Image (cartoon, rainbow, N blue to C red; front, top):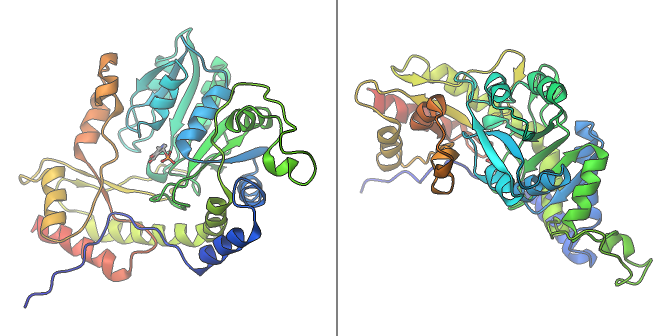
Length: 379
Ligand SMILES: Cc1ncc(COP(=O)(O)O)c(C=O)c1O
């Protein structure tokens, strides 16, 4: 009987007894919604990043929506953002009634190109939402200057980059606001969750909008005021992170340095072992960057009859290895085709890009399995 190798997924979370204990503590505490644990998680991220304030929310998408609302984005405004990203930022822009203006990425780092962004500025431009692709920060210094020079709000979509630096600046600490994702496949996870950090006035505005526009949180009123003793000062939304979720996030955040070190080790193994395969372009880390390696993104050029899709197909069908694609360019998705964008660099990258498994739960044998499989496909 031949034994079939177990499926190696593209991504799997690393959760342990610490998260279990913290969740049990929360369940037994009598307070399971946004409260003390969310506060501790916010404080931990805030102090490590050195930002003025932080608010834990239900997803990064919620954080993006709140960031743009807090920044005053409204119908008629334009917001510059890359197309080589997840749909969350463009969707949030549209939900504010504004128009996303998609710009090109740097073909080497795959992060938003500051020169292309500058060329896209018009009198209607109000904000730029940059994205730190796969854990590689974009050129933070250039975007900080661009936002200053043109009076724009800078939002960092740091969904992939909770633990990454460029030119000595930590991703998520430079923009007026930055957002993080704790979705199931992210560098740390609590299933679904996000955080918005940055300038105190803007995070406070986001906090108000994210709890219905109510002036105090339920936890702040608990035991001190009648629960119904509140005022709604603006028409808001409900985007708070519950404490059950924050309990997981808190413990995951303590593990982030170890997770990042392991991701970097895996990336280094791939760098060493996959270099030189014809047509396979490995990731380039920008000078001055410390990559967070949420993704290990390769580009499969059309050499030897191989394409990204044939390689992904053989990894899955012949070797039982999962991969992913980051991303389908947003301007090519049905909801955005009306914008009729011309972004040849983005389109070429998107046609060739493949994300290999790269996460702390992988064993050394898992990493070798991926390497051996790629060598077999190239042989
Ligand atoms: C770049 C980027 N931004 C935002 C998001 C949205 O994150 P969430 O699922 O937490 O809303 C994602 C999710 O994959 C993402 O990749």
